[in-house]
Image 1 (cartoon, protein in one colour):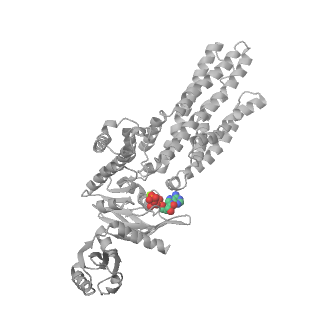
Image 2 (cartoon, chains in turn orange, green):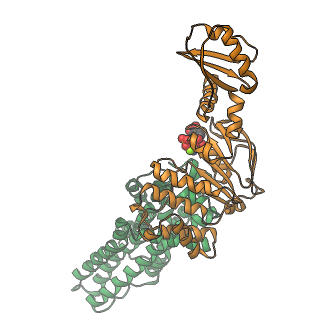
Amino acid sequence: MIRVEGLTRRFGDRVAVEGLTFEVREGEIVALLGPNGAGKTTTVRMLACLISPTSGRAWVGGHEVHAEPEAIRAIVGILTETPGLYRRLSARQNLRFFAELYGIQDARDRIEKYLRFFGLWERRDEPVATYSKGMRQKLALARALLHEPRVLLLDEPTAGLDPESARSVREFIAGLKGERRAVLLCTHNLPEAERLCDRILLLRTRLIAQGTPEELKRRLFGTRVVIELANPRPGIDAELRLPVVKSAELAGARLYVEVSDPHRDNPALVRRLVELGAEIVSVREEETTLEDVYHELMGDTDAQG
Amino acid sequence: MRRVKAVLRREWEEAVRIRMVLFSVSFFPLFMVGFAAYLVWQGRSLPPQGQAVLMNTALIYFFVLPVVIPLSIAAYSIVGEKEQGTLEPVLATPIRDWELFLGKALAPVIPGVLISWAAFGIFLIASCLILGGIPPGVLSPPWLLSIFALAPFTALFAVFVTMIVSSRTTDTRAAYQFSSLAVLPALIPLIVYSARLTAVNLIFVGIEVGVLLPLNAVTLYIALRLFRREEILTRWK
Ligand SMILES: Nc1ncnc2c1ncn2[C@@H]1O[C@H](COP(=O)(O)OP(=O)(O)OP(=O)(O)O)[C@@H](O)[C@H]1O
Ligand SMILES: [Mg+2]
């Protein structure tokens, strides 16, 4: 549904995104994960044909962004960075305006359906200015969905919401899974990306890595094994020297050892430790979180400048 | 046209909720009518010739109205969208740039011109009542032409200027004040009139058109260039 090849956008001398290549298929929810200024909003704007790429190509729903912007806008729903609602108008007036712009036939029913769905029906005729932030975000989501778009671009849908509202928005997004849409979700919230998305694109101007959360974790850190010692002896980590050990570090009573496959490598590791006189209390695998992956990758690019 | 209509409707739904806009479309024209009528009332005992001079002077207010009314609507319309961040979701719909532009331009011009004409009508009725009839030489074709044919152009000019100014500021008041300069072409009659003390004639209307058309063309060109999707999202402050 979304295909991007070498997409680049500059603002004057500043490169906002460079050489982006990725794909989002039907039925998939993909996260565009990156820190402030990574180029998430810029990417989404290019895909919604709001701004044009400096170079590279992109297709949305089979239409190319240069060639058929109107066809793309008709099938794309976008939740912009700020809700962008007419605050003096009511929820209904807001949605009716957009229904007219999208040329929706059964606008009344459609508006009622989404206002009820997001629990805004009771307050449909009050000005948006009187809504809470969470209600506004929901109304903005309703607006993005009004024309039943096949491609959904969500720019930080839970930013600035309290945990309760954020959760209900996340539940809604999770519910989009299994519908025949392609969803691209911009976020810098790691747990959100991990929980909601099938795949993650790590972005910092360039695409740094992509894959399922599991793949990203495995690719980056083999697996860490944590061994608790009864008699931690400084220097034991350096003496470990085994081919299967990628790295070892003693911290307090814990020895952190990185191996590629714990099932295969742990017995040898334990044998070697016993040889070195270690008294082992416990051996367990450490969970790597996506957060570790994120900091590892983003930290790397920091170092490169 | 469906989308232009949608823009117009939304603009008006919003405008009626803004106090400043309501003021400028209701009290301000009424105030001008009252002022003009007062002028006529003061000359009620003059000979018809003197009454005609006074009335022609009063008519000049009705040149200013079609500029001032759209100004405030337009300033709120554009700065308001920028403040609320509503342009981006609108531009993400299949609306074309020109449809949005047309809706935005007509939204202030239509009520501006209609209300000006209505105010003019009320003034004429009031003068009729005060003087017991319209003095000869007042409702000459050049005058009527100026009021009815020029109003849309002065109004459009005001709107284009406001669009250009508003794209550069997020402060409604600043937009409004800067754009008020757009009233200048509408003041030409006043200037000519006070310099030569002659009633408006056809040559004069011709000059006014000759000034307004190029001004409208230039400001339209600039406003259209500013009103492109990309420009709005990346360059507008
Ligand atoms: N209109 C613009 N003019 C100049 N530079 C811009 C413009 N829009 C974005 N940029 C620059 O492009 C880069 C990427 O910005 P973008 O808004 O896409 O980041 P983001 O990933 O959405 O960040 P955030 O998480 O803060 O929303 C930034 O360096 C930004 O300053
Ligand atoms: Mg952003």
